[in-house]
Image (cartoon, rainbow, N blue to C red):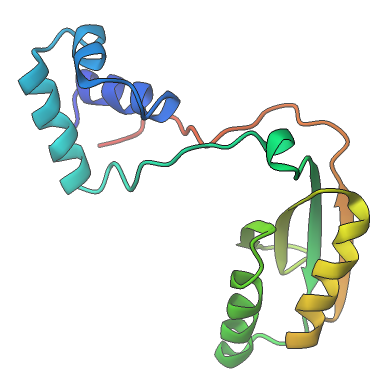
Length: 154
């Protein structure tokens, strides 16, 4: 069971995973050793899945975001696995979700420029048959980040 200090630790770590244990302990009013033990427990329990570095997309040369909405006529496990493998091999596809509603999947694709989308599209359709693909270009990012609310954690 998580308490408020655990939640605060999680919130601070997801904002800056590089924060020192000393600074973190100070911010949550714990000793360094107690804070370190809590972090280890949160990792062992799976509350902390991994620690990553978020790169600046402009500096990395991929400022453009395209969302591809996909419909398929295929829903068999074999097709889904081929699709999963096809998109898994394309690093520009940074997120993929199976959906309810009018479309089956949505892909978040990061690119150097919008014209590069056609290259990604062709890589996918060479490997799996799709019924319909509709792409939308993000004009402006209003909110971004991997942070999730910590108040629901048990």
